[in-house]
Image (cartoon, rainbow, N blue to C red; front, side, top):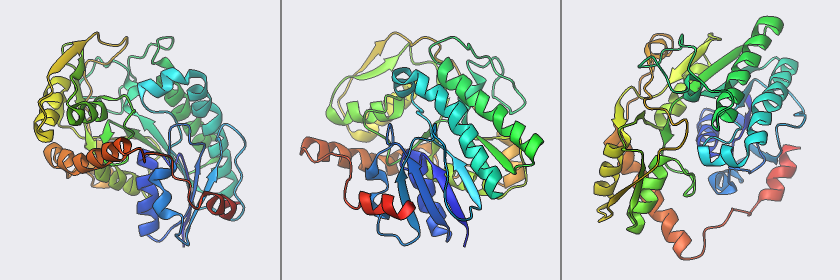
Length: 333
């Protein structure tokens, strides 16, 4: 039985990865300080005999008794709203958190997977973005706290691979969506769903011509699973090469929700990238991976989740899950 540690495991992507690892027969230890993650995402796992949860900040020393086969480092604020609110912690997670997680992987002889981001490319001057592109990033801009945290994390990961022989993997994750996203996430897709379902004006920043590529979470998890088992240390883009403008996405979500919301425009945030689309030839060649869920299909799968969450919120029952937390924490010690 493989034993895997997932940092940030109560987050959107992390919780889905915990599900997949358990389905594949792993024992899973989930670490999260719940700054942006929520116990709602993993409450269904608290009774699972192979799942343990520990509330822990990865910027502090990490130690897990017993053997580990894999360490997956997902912990980090990931939306502009979060990392602009927590800039120093975002930098610390990318630096100290990555160092601590790598140190644990080295001590245990475990495979280490870093969840990096397409934001390492900044506002790209090459389109689409291949892994060989070094990026166009402003290190002192508002978004630099996240971009540079991830760029440092990649450098640290490669240093551990080259200097200590740690078996490392780096996933550059592009925009991902699906159930378990936070209502207050602040990113375009959840904001559009929430505003459209409430019948509020849907806010598009700039003129909406900026583009993004959206990957349904099931496709991303499949890519992470395959990368985890690949013998390849350098970065691999995991994203959907189908590009869409933000204005078009807003229109699609309004129509899907059957909403009468109108689109309003607001100033474009500083440093917002104009384009974003992955070159995925490396993932196709090394992993045999390509997204399978079309955007329309993925949006249809996501809609019921946002409807349900908003209904719970309206009923006053939206709260962090608490049941079984102490037992889960104790079991991870």
